[in-house]
Image (cartoon, rainbow, N blue to C red; front, side):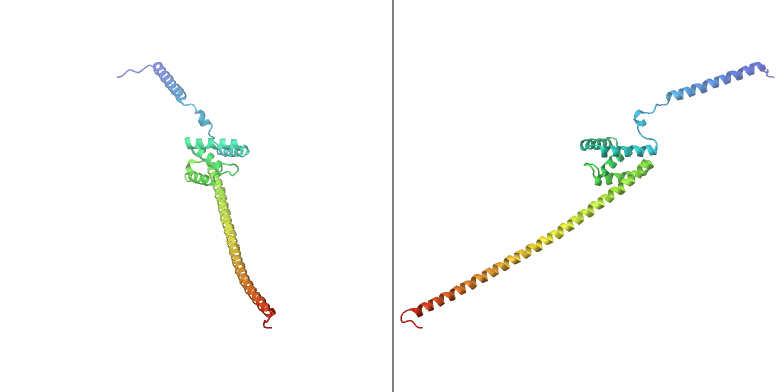
Length: 215
């Protein structure tokens, strides 16, 4: 029959196994911690909180509005270049919001509407605050474009009415000139007839006053 191991030997073996298991676990944890990558510096700049994201967008728009024209052009160009080179939702939305802002010379509501619509077409790529800002900016931009279109149509209608007035006044002037020319011609013809009658009367009077003339 097999021999029984002494109780002390079994106990020692259990302690050794427990110690080895502890070393393995400790080594695994240490290696896991050592192999974990540190966050990249550029990722730390991207706001993780939804409210912080909205705050950063609004702060950039406030800086744009408060800057002189030369600085505004510089800010807008930087946003454009970043949106082109790294077209993330954050970069594209930043540039679209700047284009939608009417407070600077580089505003472009048509381009802003197109880019905001593209961003909202993929809502899963944006934070809730980004979607809200994009929706608000898009509604404001569309309202602005509608007002500009109404103004353009009103201007065209006013220009059309003014054109009609000019055409009507020109026609009246031409008609008056034609009437004046007709009256002048009639007056000249009447004057010629009057002169002819006067000449006939003078000739008849001269003949009557002549010696041997008929009275």
